[in-house]
Image (cartoon, rainbow, N blue to C red; front, side, top):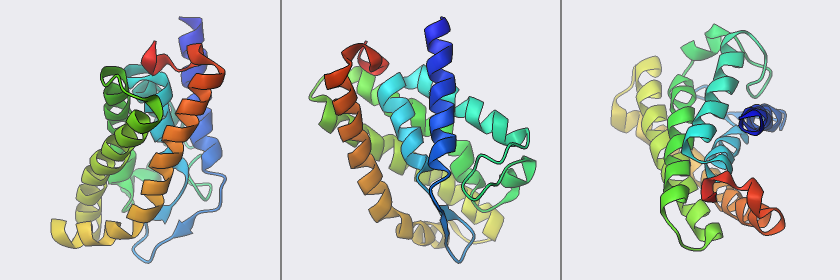
Length: 180
């Protein structure tokens, strides 16, 4: 139990630390950050439940006002921006990513990369597109067109998440709880 709590807190801190990498904000107000890779890693390493809990802890800290989002943003106001859909989708993305890694028993690097693509890109984009559509007063197709700018970077993050997870499993097999 204590180990699980420590890992959940550690991965919430990892998402926050990935927010320190300078962001690049697109013209429509949604930043490109490394934090989505942290969400992917929560799922691939911790598994579905623990990964989602780590992301929920991170979002709770953001809601409390800690400046943990890229660019030092935090507080409830962060949930009233065009990126709100992505924020709400973070825990679902981590859960789906973790669930795929837990259930699909093939090579870990490829499974974690595919799971990151499905959970951390497809599922996350579904939430992000809806949020952008609502906040920017655009149609779903118009908002979907806007998120195409994120695809190349997110594919790279998914591949990195797969490689990092496989490397962690090779060096410390007991630390990859999604395969425990």
